[in-house]
Figure 1 (cartoon, rainbow, N blue to C red):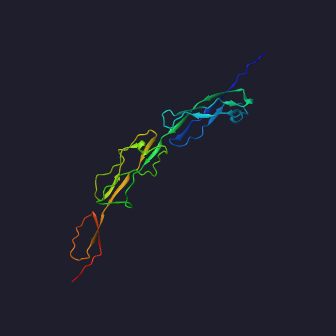
Figure 2: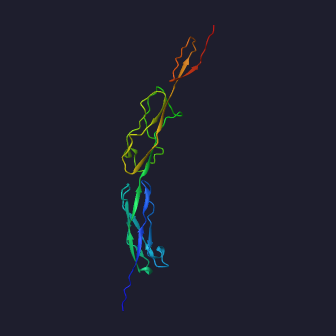
Figure 3: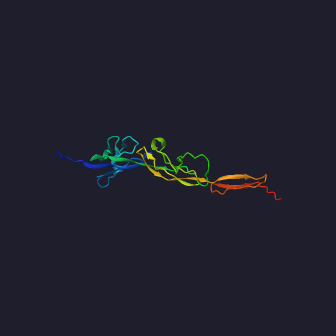
Length: 212
């Protein structure tokens, strides 16, 4: 008489996949289990095409990975019943590396010069191509309210992320004020009184002393 042949469950799992926000999607892959001896994914599964939910933002639950179309088997392997298990595509936060433009001993500010505007160095900030820094970060850089000779840290305590797609790494900068050069021309002779002060470097130039 007629015998009923039960199809074998073939479980196909979408692989959980990760990427950093702003980067290109990696390929979507899968694993499968439930094969008879001698069978494998390459010989049984003719077509398994995957897709993920649209969206490029970091989300708490990720983006679901599903099938584009039904799974196709090779004609000689019709004794399987494919069962697809969706996966998750996770977009992880991108590091925003914030470092101020520093004024070091090689690039100092002389005492008495106008204070510099404190700015972020965009060279290695690691901003995604699609983003603008003003749409990602708010706040301002600060330093000690002191215009005397010295070295002061540039702080980012008021900086705050607007975008949920980033986490912030801040490296303090340096604001260096050095003594201002003072050139004294004594070509005309005479007595010169130089008051000692730490705020100036005195460069005695072109001095002509006449001893009578």
